[in-house]
Figure 1 (tube, one colour):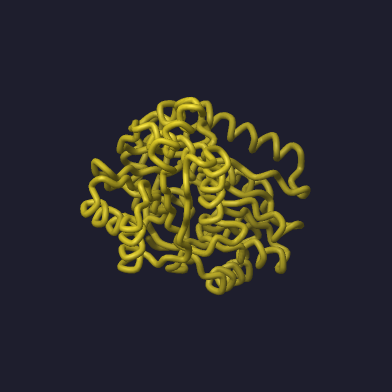
Figure 2 (figure 1 turned 120 degrees about the horizontal axis):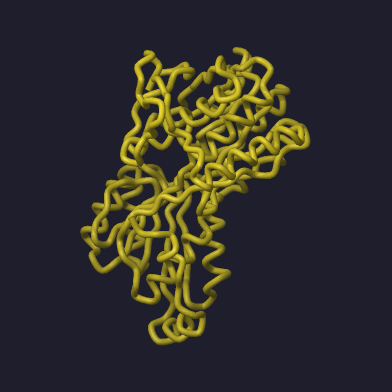
Length: 354
């Protein structure tokens, strides 16, 4: 696995400028699964693209295609971007994995990077963040703020990345309320505001007084605000959509990663590899707390985040049992990265099916 330090160390700005003048700007493209909007998964990647423009100026020419469905449509778009002369292409959704690999085989001189995937090639790198670390801390916050001990979780697809978040959130909540339960509703879509809102309404009506999500829109925060329930947003700070009830958000920061990888491509030092950064690397954070969160709770959650960043607290440290009561992680042990990356089960306390 490439170290974050090696990724972010870059040549001096003067060298980058001279290289750009000699060869022309590096053409970089991004493929987004949902509309850019002003919050959400795609918006955070778009902020990273804008950060590249701001940092590298004339040395780079970036573009993006938004709202691209996973599957055949993604393959068509990625191939078109490669044909159009883009040198480095970032594909930012799990379902783009196989289309990215297929196109990369046809364009061996081009560089590709796939977010949240696990298949690589000489010209295909993968990258993701340990979103589950922020989810664990968010669970602690939910556990402290809830009166019912019932939480709602609106999720897109039962892939490991999503299951990690649901499990970590539940474990965090249960660290402060051992009887807490998390009810899961699947939307089978990364971005469907109508389904997300309907799921949030159903969960709140069923007793959840804190809802969160692994979907791309702001619908959950808006629904919770209207119903008077707390929400914990995902991807972006969504406090403006829930000014009274959105407690915080588990946020993603791709800016430094994208700048570092584009610099490496310009310098000729780009290599395929895998990056999985978390709280320590600043890729996963919590948004500012809502005024409704007491100071003592803020300090508690901040302490959890600091401990995770320092490595002294691991969200998937045992003892952990699954839904059937079977021990998955013994006391004194913790899940290895490989087991976390391949997670296909729910912890005790989750109500739902994988």
